[in-house]
Image (tube, rainbow, N blue to C red; front, top):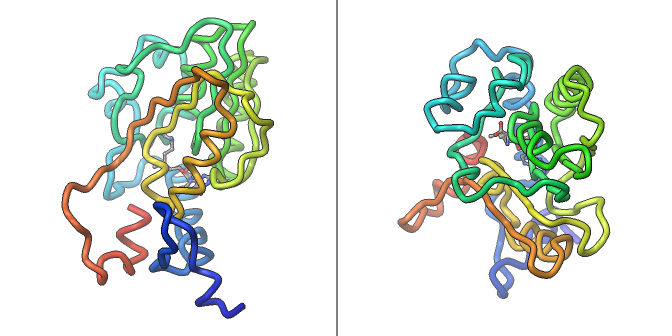
Length: 213
Ligand SMILES: C[S@@+](CC[C@H](N)C(=O)[O-])C[C@H]1O[C@@H](n2cnc3c(N)ncnc32)[C@H](O)[C@@H]1O
């Protein structure tokens, strides 16, 4: 199989070409979000940090999440407005980054619940891990990996959350198929993400810088 053929994926029920080299895109995403976790004071083309979370009306539990994680918060909206996560639930955060949403969800589910975070950027995940330990949250589990291929059993999760991540993934069908697999019947998906209401030009689809932002 040629590299070009390798970028063909099943999307939307029909075979569709992914317009970027997925390996290059992942490298660029990893660089961008490593910077967000290691240089959080920098200006990015998207808003970050505690002021942004507060502006979005984040739940009270954000106040308990230390600055070391919240300063790298890079969500796009507040999906907790769709619902709090129930006590004792198992919640999965796709692309948990430095852990703001995950650590809020871990407080909501309490010690009888589980909060599982997945991310592909090691330094983001390391920050989430350190903060969870510092907060004494023994119900947090972290996995380094891709949300297109989740390291979880079928029907293992009550609620899937995600903030500003699925827009970064070209093969959205793989992501939604994995969400469908891991959610238990009657489970819930609540996400915040970027939606574009008009057709994106072929030239724009090929621009890695537009994907990563
Ligand atoms: C915009 S940040 C959002 C992080 C976090 N949800 C938050 O609100 O702060 C995007 C995150 O998604 C992760 N990411 C992007 N594509 C991914 C993929 N295919 N699999 C796993 N993580 C991914 C990045 O590493 C980054 O941490």
